[in-house]
Amino acid sequence: MFAAAQRFDETGYEMWRRPFFTICLSAVLSMPALAFERPFPAPTKRGQMTPGAYPEIAIDGKLRRLAPGARVWNENNLIEMPAALRGSDLIVNYTEDSHSEIDRIWILTPEEARQPVAKQINPLQQ
Image 1: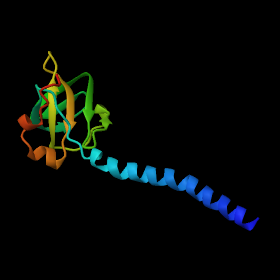
Image 2: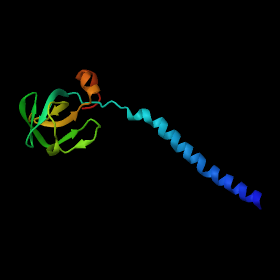
Image 3: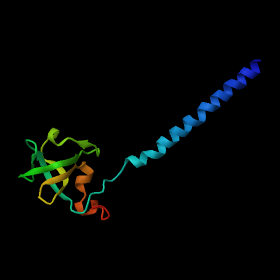
Image 4: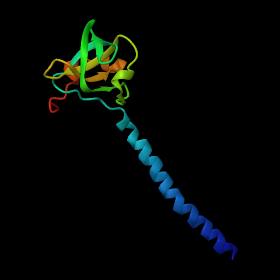
């Protein structure tokens, strides 16, 4: 009886050990996927942004307006609410709509800010 109980414990141990190691291995292998480069669309421009009273912002010292439905991504590629932006002289990539309003803004990491815009543009994305 003791041998049967011991065999059951080993089998139970084997049952959880394999999925556990599989999950750990998957997590380790997916780590390089977290180091991503954000592709920017072709008409992307670069500037220094200082948020103002929504919907106004200053880019390179010039007062600009955000388009209705403007989207802002932070350094972690998470969406920020445009009215909640804080900070000054943020290095950003941005695009304009047909009315010359800013419709998309990406707040850049220091590594992204060091690269030229031309190197960051994805030619397949419009």
